[in-house]
Length: 462
Image: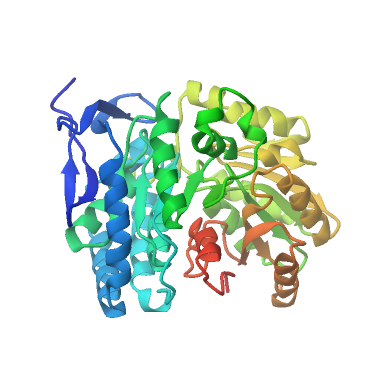
C-alpha cells in the first residue's frame, strides 16, 4: 500500500467522546481504498472495521445525549457547523474526484447546506425522537447525504452514517465538523463485500430494538437482503415485505411537469439545475411538457446545454464532467438504449454529449441516466403526466418517486398537493417552480422522508 496517500478515519462515539479509528488500528481489519471515479487512481484509504459494537453503543449514547440538550444548545451547534461549512474546504476536490461532480457545484452545495443550517430554530422538533438512525448510502452526492444526517438530528434522532466505501467524502466532511463541535453524528465506512449483510444487520437490529430507523438509499432488495440475511439462502427474500423500522429510498425518482402557464425559461433552468449531479437519484428522468409549450421548451433547452462546458471535473468552469468510454458504456448507454427505443434524439447522444430525447417513455423512467439525459414527453394536459408518474411509481419499492417539480400556476400546484395528500399523486415531495434538487427548509432532499416519519407536520416546498 502506498503510505503517502492519506489515511482517513471512522468517527465513533465511545465512552463519552468521539474516537478516531484509523486503518492501522486494531479495530480495523485492513484497509479499503477510495478511487477516482474515472481514472481508478487511489486517492486515500479508510479502515475496514472488524466490529460494529462501538458504533452501536455510541449511537445509543448519542441519542440520549442529543435529546438531553436544551434547544438553544442544539441551535448553537448547528450554527457552528454552518460557519465551518462556509469555509474553503480541503475535501471539495476529493468529493469531485470520488463522485464525478463538477467542483464548482460541490462548493455551491456546501455553501447552500451551510445556509440551511443557519436557521435551525425553524426546524428543530419538540418530540423526543424515535431512536438512533442508521443511513446506508451508496452515492454521496453533496446534495443528498449531508441532509440525511441533519434531518435525523432535527427530528431528535442520533445518527450513524455509513458512507459509501467508494464515495464517502461529503458525509465525511460533516462528520469531521461534528466531531469538532460536539454534534452527535457518527461516521463509519467499511468494505461492502460478502460480509456486508451481517455487519449491516447488526445496525438494523439496534434500530429495531431502540425504535429508530434504518435507512437505505438504493435498491429495496438490498435492504431485504441485509435484514433477512439469516434466511436469504433458503428463499427469495426480495419477495418479502419491507421490514419494520426501515425506510427504503428509491434508486431514482425525479420528474418534471411543465404546463401551459409555466415560465419556460425558469423551467429549462430548473431541468439543467437538476442534472448538476447526474448520479443523484432525484434527477428528472421524465420531463412532461404541455403540447403547446413543448417546442419552445425543447429549443430553449438545446440552446442552453449546447453552450455548456464539458470538461475536467476539477476545472472550475466545467458544467458537465467528462466520463470515460467505459463509464459511458456501462452506465449511460443502457439508459440511452431504452430511451431511444421510445423516442428520437434531438441533440447529443454520443460520448460526453448532454442529450435531449423526445418521445413516449416508460421503462426509462425506472432507470438512472448517470449523465445529463433529458427525456421530454409531450402531454395533452397535466393529468397525463401525473398518470405516467403514478404508473411508473408502482414498480418502485416505496410506491412513490422522491421529487416532482411542477412549473405551473399557484392554483394548480395547490390542486396537486391535495392529490398528493389523498394518495392520488405518488410522490414524496412537490417543488413549485423549483428544481428537483432545490434547497428548501421543508424539502431537504431525502430528509423529507425522515420528516414524514419523525412527525414534521409540513413538508411541502412552499
